[in-house]
Length: 325
Image (cartoon, rainbow, N blue to C red):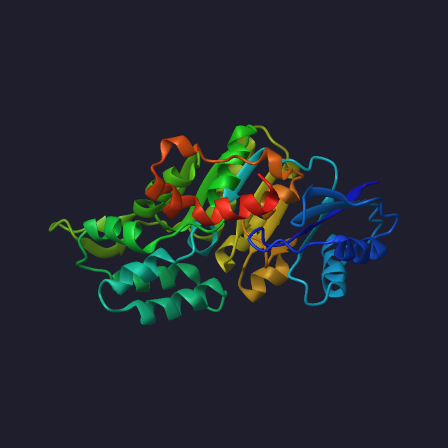
């Protein structure tokens, strides 16, 4: 068999069953038996793809599953586990858009969020949209960024498990964002990325935000360039790479990866990506690479007091308990 279809649901609501795997297998040419990667959460079905586009096959299976909240990722079996991972930050590794949250500190969140949404949908160019939004932040004290990170920014479900599991298996991890280094340097370290790349907010002589961003702006071209440069530096093939994002400025990077995924993405991005995650959390990227649930990294509980554990990992622990861990 040459290819594999991976079916994944939200681990917080495990509902995948033999019914869904049978429906999928009936549509996959020469399908073999389903292999469970995690009971009621993720399963692999090997098959032989032929000449049909893989996204077309995934969409057909997804449609056959009806209203079942299940994602379908179809890809070659060969070289399935990747060696280089690139990820967008805003609305991907974290739930928020950092610039929108900063704008909330000056009472302009609604206005800025509308511009952000249009840029992420690809309706307006990213670079001028970023300059326009940054100009509205002029005068903010840099300490506001730490305040926003501490009070308003939350990791996407599965973010830390994903990155830490990949690191344990020797994968190089890169956070690449059209946002700002003041955020990526902190958030990237919290999640566990090897390195991070983003835009730089400039300060005025008064030490406050100048309303300007350092040029050239890191946008879609720079995200793609980062993928290519890291791939070449590590002497990897295109098929060795995996990338994930949600917005229009991520699409070139997603398309250039061996496995490119749109994560709870804007419609145009979801339509153009090789694979989509619309229902699962970020651990779906691990299942897509054939990792089993028992291979996932788990946080060292003994290093956290009870309050920290409940705040940071309570929901994840509940999901693990459902799996019998």
